[in-house]
Length: 376
Image (cartoon, rainbow, N blue to C red; front, side, top):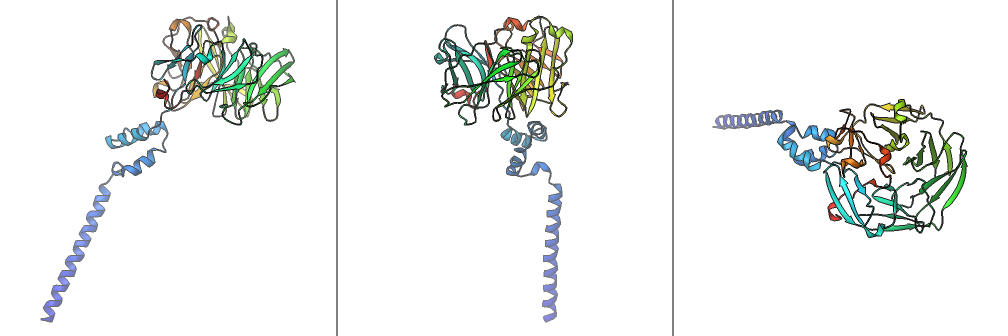
């Protein structure tokens, strides 16, 4: 009797162990059959939120499930808008090149003023009648005044949004072939500070010079291609011993000085030279060798060039990448021209045009707020 009971218990134990082994083997088999597409949604979202836009797009092509998750966490930067300044009235138009849409805003606060520069969604403006210099955000209607200062036709720039304590306004004026007057100011100041600086290399200031603020320094590109640098902390001015970018002779035809633009991207200084008979040439300053290098590609970066200030963007819709978007040229109506470095051509097809025909104060690129729909 006892022996029979022991045999039953042994058989029961073997059955249980067999079932456990079967369950374990089945579990392993199921795990082996699982793929990356079976990852939990939460884990997929975490992974894809750390991908670049390019890798996000690639991941979205794996399967429908990954596509849905990739779209939910995808971040695409917003392009600047081209703001048009009317000759009469106070109706201002904004052109969004990514959506190809135009918006309008009534801005009576800007009546009688001239645009000087834009950065971080703010305009810097000058009212010649009373020498009033002020910041204005066209989307929030916020205004910040600076001390009065006479700005004839000299270029002006600022380092960051005027709401920041580190904001510095910079302007440079030609005094003589060897002397420039540099004036600086900041929100809350009672007056402008002006200091004359010696030029060691030829540098002539002009409304057609270009200004950018990059890595704590103001860079100023002169008419003839020399690069001046001003350090607002050290209050020093220097003209770099870097020969101007080398362009073909036909780039120096009629109004050649008006077809130059300068921008910065991730610490790099970029200069764009245009010509009415040739494709644009883009140069980057090699800051280790102190030479200008011609660029064959922008590596997906998009540049937005206008006379008074220019901007750069990454992670824009694919069709806009590796291109330069110029401000409007009169006979294309109120839309901008772009040049694709991938296709080596203008869009729309390039026609004969002259930058000298365009008013430098007619339009400027400006960064819209993230939720622009609530302001327009």
